[in-house]
Image 1 (cartoon, helix red, strand yellow):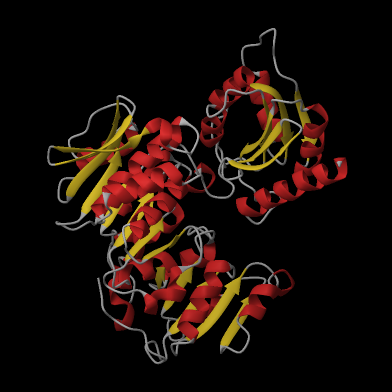
Image 2: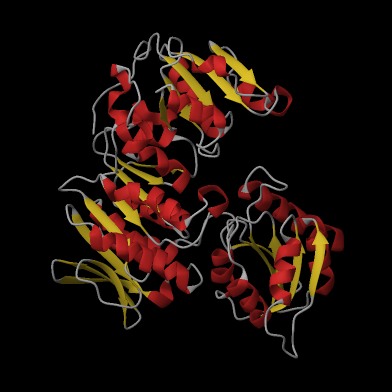
Length: 488
């Protein structure tokens, strides 16, 4: 941790290139520009598509290189560091050439973690990390800590770095895209200005948690080995005296936990009693520390639906306790928190039909978890853009648990083929290719009957039609409300 404050001249003369102009890129550009750096923002998209972000930086001494990434930005005499938005793959030619020229590459979350004066709690996993991060933040806030939640969710915390105090808690959801930049090999040969020298080495948060590791983002990482390696950064550099937390029930997380010996290790499990951490036994969420067992709450009192959310609560209990949360605070949040937008979010109930927004489900595994959360008849809206992930298990469950499957987006043919390849049965649900989300919602309204659930749980990313999963979820909510209004 550091107690450094970043004055108006903290980075005077430093050459900063921000790669990717959006929510995170604009926050980084503002942070460095307001502290004296020479900032250039580059984005492959043209200015016409980025005008709102450009306008948000009006009045600051920032240059823009839009529509392409010019190599003139890679001159070591003008550029000291490239701050890369997580959505920009590190293997694009522009960034590969930056590494060849020994320029420092980093991200907002790495800068924030490195220079935070408060302990950083980092949470990653293939699924459940957003809900677990939110639960952890709320448990710490309920325990009396000033808590800052960010990373892959919410407002980029670099914009609030000067407001963070040593006694606060910083809780970050960290994706594999962000964690790639926490590894030492990213900048092993880079030239590094003194102001940013800590960013050259490997870094792990003070409390690092791996919930699970299952196939995800293989369209970017290509192999599970590479994907797992990126995730491993969250505990790879953890110091003695810090804490690492792992999901015992997941073989990928358990394997990394078994190799982690330097810090204190805690576990969470819904199937086994662990020695330190949190487990589920006899319907009770139990915290265990050094042989002392503390009941937190009954599993049936957790408001979040589904077995996967009981795991999220167990994880949050183990993580939040490691950061100082009280059992009473953890129990209160676990039994009162009803979820975050776009994650099994009930958005409307009309004529006995419940509409649920699970736009965060960007992998088949997340879709499977959603289907297992309900016993009522489900009209499933699935699709989006595939991430080169296997669909066989999800397709089998769609056949078993849905009343109808309405497909949309770039992956609709792929998903339809996966369903067609399953073992056929007499009660096969109808599968329709609707093309767009709007058409899928309209069709769902036509066939839904009282007692049905209309579930948006795509299983694919939003990037074929939307900026992110939140934009897709918001459109779903708008479409549902529009249809309901038209029916009245």
